[in-house]
Image (cartoon, rainbow, N blue to C red; front, side, top):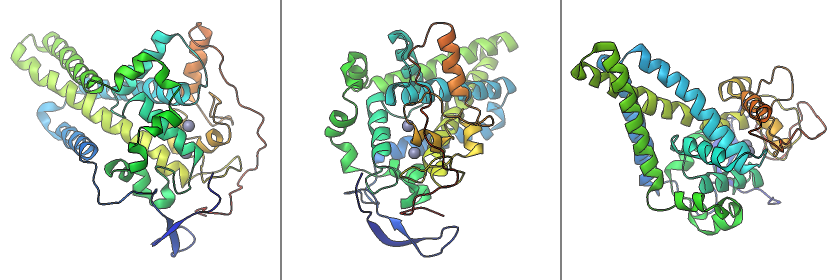
Length: 330
Ligand SMILES: [Zn+2]
Ligand SMILES: [Zn+2]
């Protein structure tokens, strides 16, 4: 952890002061060096999700598919697969199941497992200090999505994998996912699966292939584009919202918070202060109201013999409301 903070000269209107200096962006980041691949994908998928507003792509089956898929893909892919399993090793499971979670995570278009893990481990190592890839102390929108839209030379170096994701890349399956457009192939397979599912449902509902095609397209619009946008913002809100708003059970060397709304919306990922205080624990919710459906799912897997070595919360001393002095937003 760096022993001093570096602040830019811009000011951030915070809840208590209108002249709070922003944390400088990570070393080497220039706000106008756009990452055109990321910007195009993020902009493009948001634009395609707007097709949901067109009446010909609206039907309740597609809406239900989107809601169910958003819950499942976010929970199984990102929360369980990328976060609690690969990044923090909060439990272990059969390799085939781990790989399944990771394929589901790739369908969420949040980058490859090694890269996601590397970025997230760097976040934990340098939380709310200058090298943190997405601290809201450098700007709320920066933490939410801005950091994905510009090039970060630090994160582009191969050394980032060596330093933060060497264990992940010991598995040849994850090495393959880094190469030969496998990520893109999985995303395209996903589009076909949703289209075919929609086509079958459309045929059953209408009996006509011509009438079934708009229903098939609606499955892609809602089940893939709208759902991807939803899961993106859910993940991004953990980076942005839960380092700004909420309560703290523990004193941590960062501004992490427990946020009730994000906690419930993102299946327990919003109990973020608890998580920063005890990162390996597979269980983020500590109080009775801190419902953690991701942990409950891991418990269910454990009960049926598909998860073991589940890391339980350590006895970390609680210091409610405490906030570090440096760089806090209160
Ligand atoms: Zn984490
Ligand atoms: Zn955090």
